[in-house]
Image 1 (tube, rainbow, N blue to C red):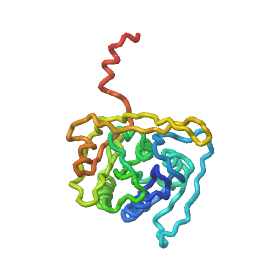
Image 2: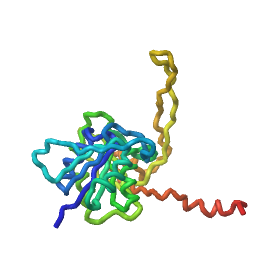
Image 3: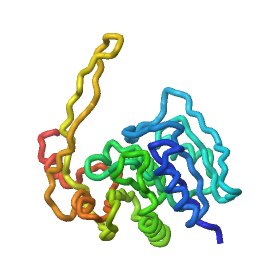
Image 4: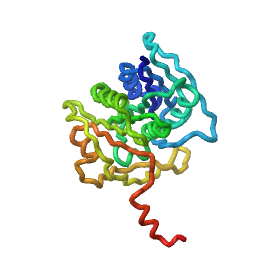
Length: 259
């Protein structure tokens, strides 16, 4: 029987340590094809390339003659990478798409801005089971290997049982250095936002420019949320959906005098 085909992408770029770790983890579970941005694309959300040329290049890598891995860089966004992989690069439909491992959290409201999750969502739109993985550590030297067993466990379960149609899993891993994870917790997305402001500065040439800053504001005290799980040593798994319909609001809007 064929090994499962696993498509890997991310938003930090094809050379990012988080992606390199995810490739190593997935090679033990199936055949791997990587299609990832050739430069960092963090915060791109679900942007796609329309007015610019899109380039892709097969990477020549020293993988100790590992024949079950192919890698391609792409000049576009994370969503572009998945579209290109499915339409032009792969010769069969992947059994799973995994995105990450992102350097930094994509919990709570961050999922809206995340290129990591948008790549997974793009795969989900195409009917491919998909998971976005993020580690709550923004540093380039982050330790990803301590979560290998849990990441592989989640992927094995997804390959064996499938993921419900229209659902993509958002997995966030707490930064733990001296203690073990307490487990894996299925959660809802916490209600939170960013209190943002622009830091106005002057460039060396005398022009004004702005640097976006802000503080994360957690508005949710529930103990069933991703933020609670991460703060208490759990890996959070949030089933997310790309049908953005607010079904609970349909009746309310139907009561408007529109006709």
